Length: 582
Image (cartoon, rainbow, N blue to C red; front, top):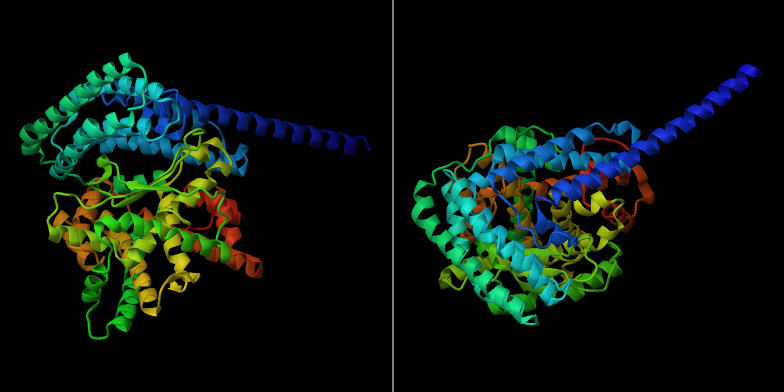
């Protein structure tokens, strides 16, 4: 009897001790992760803090001096050591996922600083950093005009020094990076000359406005000087290689997306999905135009687009039918009735993006507007170039773009962020989740019946055109998948990549140029298709497990409630296992 009692007491004591250990490590991780976010992550990315809605660094600017870069590296290594020391086995499942997410973020930052080294290669980093630092202060009215202007002046006073650092740091960059910087600079100059002052006309403090006039003029002068230096000095000696190589590419996928498949296996997956989408596109194209080659149908589809000055209104007109369909077909819970605002893409983003969603940060409490950005044709384009560009906004891709960026894509995912299970998940995430979700919704919405006559399409022919548009966007992402790997591992030239987007991705020449430029600086932009395929597999696996109890809206709601971490983490939460994501 005494032995049994002693055993019971010992067991109870061990249980209490285990719970105490769990609690200790949970608290320890929370403390360390908050220290990382506040003292490292946001310290070296103050514009990201502003964008997140944390306004204690609004007067600070990113610092790319060698001293700052070395300090950031040291801080990242220290944070990695401390967080690694927290045993994953002592944490609950959600916190284990958070630990993996933070470690991946730290290692990705270190890979960028120590191996990819963009401050030595990418001239646009400096000018676009300045534009973004100003934009996040003027875009949302989270404080009075005077208060935000005071922060802007503080940032602007640091900008000329940033360009001075650029001239020290940039060493034999890739020519394409310098060309992109030169291409973007006129719009950035115009942004500071016109847009920034207009955003602060309501400021009241006369002395502050006078100080701003000086700081802003100094930034404009620094931008003009930088543009001249890029053309005269840097461009002739821009002979570097933009490729990051197979080893770095693989590491980046592991750290950013928690995907560790060999690149040749990923290519097999990418090619298989490309061929499947091509076959489906070709079959529908044949139904529409039996006597024409699919490529000719692509051109015909591209020609069905709104006039450039009607593009915004056309996008806006899609909202009612899409939202109505989501409600009537129980696709996903929409947490708010507030709609995003359509606006033209900011100048510093126009060279490499045609549409995007700009949402307020998870901790922004006062200025919670979300913006759906659309890039209009450049006024300097010829009529032929404008026509080629507008092919990317055809009757089908307008629907898939609206779905992707707003309902139920990025905008809906943003509306779910406040329900994420931790502070970490409201700040850090993975492109394969965010872009994978948005890309998944393009196909899912049509599979569920949207885009049929009376549900977004006026007749059966337009329904087929809408499906072709969705498939054309899928092929664009398929091409990114393959081009990113092949171009950055040296198996595809820049020119071959452009050709691939046209011939295999069914894109216009103008779109192919933009996409290849983007791929040079965004090597792992395969995350659209990668994430979509991971979500489709997760859905199929869960449906198999749940059988008749599977519910699509419940699946989507539970997926979004996890935040936007790598899908490996979401799988573990929703399936309760660590089975392969692909």
